[in-house]
Length: 412
Image (tube, rainbow, N blue to C red):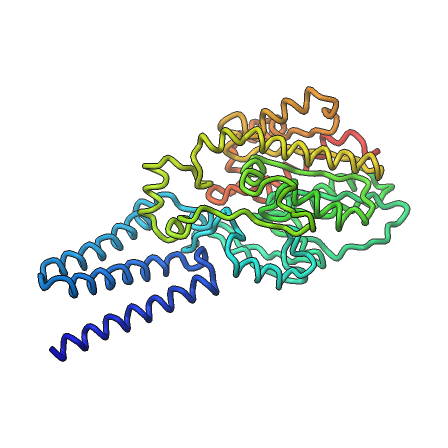
């Protein structure tokens, strides 16, 4: 009798300990960063709780053994889906990480607090922590990213502009920041060199204001509030199919409240289980038919026009600013590697629409130029991009810079 009480207390203490560790990890780290550890803790906790219930309600030992067997079987099934079949991996997991990364990046309280602490007055913008260096660890590449006073992958910005300086500001997401290449091989840096060779009478300065995971709404706010004061002669905004996804997830300019404070959209409540459970992912994708954004394809398709409207609104805001402040504006549509296989992208309808409007001179569509490069080199698109990561490699960013330069008929 005493022995059974000791076992009971031990089980209860184990549950309390596991639950405490589990809760602290959620509160202080966030579920995405320790998803693999959560998988083990979750099934251990589930098995212990079930075992305790069976022990209290029945004396049938075979039920106890069945419960324990089911718990460990589920854990092994998880491991099989994750490491053997490798089904439904997220972007970070495809690139060799054990951890899940949510599209709803700042949906939990702790991340928002940490972001506010790190960025301070820049927390309303999509930028990195100023004056920091990080190493992008990836299964295919490792590059250093150094950020300036605005959290951009660029040297310190100088307000003073000489008479012979021609200043370009390049805006965009991770393809503009240069994920997959060293800092001297991003397309803004390479474009600067190409244009400099063509205009030896000028000092060309192309500022890289690209930020990973950004979108045109964020880019407009950053430009209007922080970069417009640097008096650019030209602004180049590079967009791709991920921007449709991003504005679908985040909304338009209504992501800022009336006080100008940024609010992120929360993911579905069950994403917590999705993050660590590949069984849950299997159910979500294979049975429920949800896509990577954790919504049904119908919901995404029904909202696509709204996403296009948000993107169009942001483009028009840039054009209005260009007319008011006298800089030249160029909108670059960049295809993904997969788009080169499919022959179109999510943005194809918008590209075609804008080309038929009065804004056609402001549009640079890189698809045909990319196609000609790949045809001439007799190479697949993967020659210009990393296969698993899918971002451009240095050759791809040089191709992108050359294609943009070819479409810039003049600087004035």
